[in-house]
Image (cartoon, rainbow, N blue to C red; front, side, top):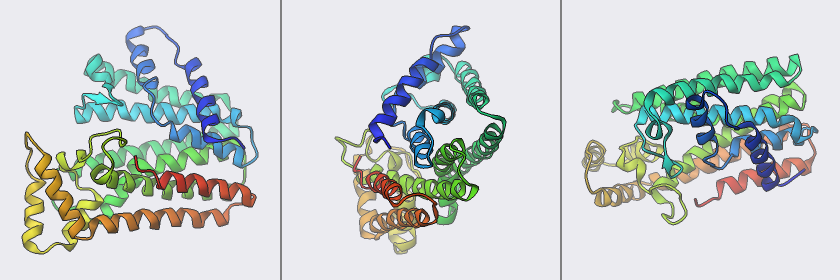
Length: 324
């Protein structure tokens, strides 16, 4: 087994060879651009790591890992168009650097390219990967639609929110891990268990991202702290606070989430005070722990050595104790 940095390096080197210039340049240059913008590469690393956990060489999983990364970046290109976002990872978004039509077409090409990468596997592995990919891609679209719908709804429930983050974020983490298991041709039970591990960890990861958006360290978070508050996003923090506040404070919080201001500093601080006073901040931290622990319970069902289970547990613990 290798360490996370080794997997990141192996994947980045492979990506460089894949994202080479092609014609027509106006289709492929934006694809090359978004793929080279960096990011944590969490999902492809999980694919490589999982392949080795189930006894394969990580190099066999590079095409599956690349497929996950290409798909993830395709979804970002289209999400940025939908959100009219000017920046991605500190750089211009594709539709800003080129135009909306280019963003749509290059994104479409990336989805097809993600599928193409499965052709490098034998028919049985190809079929399993493609089946999982189709299911996951559709769920990600459903999650994105739920997210869009929630922007104009005032009656979003916590179960609905959890379903949205499961589909928009967590299923892709689960799929990344299951793809590594499929490439390793391990048992179906192992494949399904590692998917559940990734899915539960993905929910915990997104809840933690929600928490850090409000309470993270501005120097290390990498995004604007309070961004979700500025955008009036109905996160777990917000929904939990509404449940606990009295009518007067609840009305005030709802009012704060109905306005767009030039200067949001006071709004952010007031909302954070509501999150703390209502117990929502603490409840969110508890939910992160709960989903992380549920993920760790799944490890008991895997037919792998205790050392490898421990490695997965350490990875999950490190992911959930980040402060950035």
